[in-house]
Image 1 (cartoon, rainbow, N blue to C red):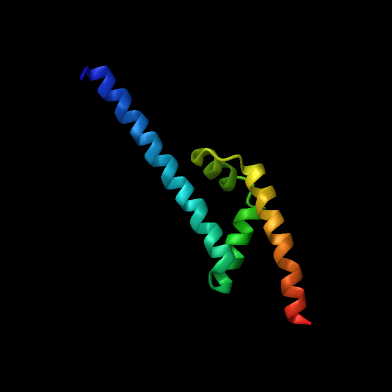
Image 2 (cartoon, helix red, strand yellow):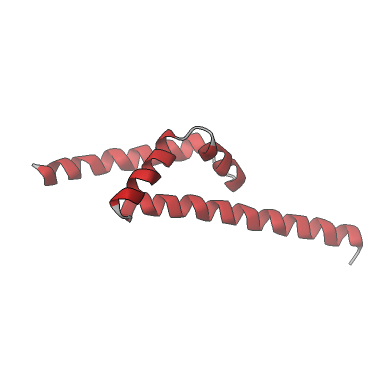
Length: 89
């Protein structure tokens, strides 16, 4: 294998690994938002919906469109709210 090919393969594999890592960070945050302890849910929700700097950066590293992800998460949040209101009544 040529040195050039070995370097480009290593860079690609590193890129894939980093993308997977950042996707895992986002997935873990969503998991905490959905089913974590209350304090973690609150922190995750603030991050997912109100953080405008780090959230976009992490999504970029993960290869995910931050606006699209937020829109999809907002749909989940809207669907969950009626259940909370019914349980509280």
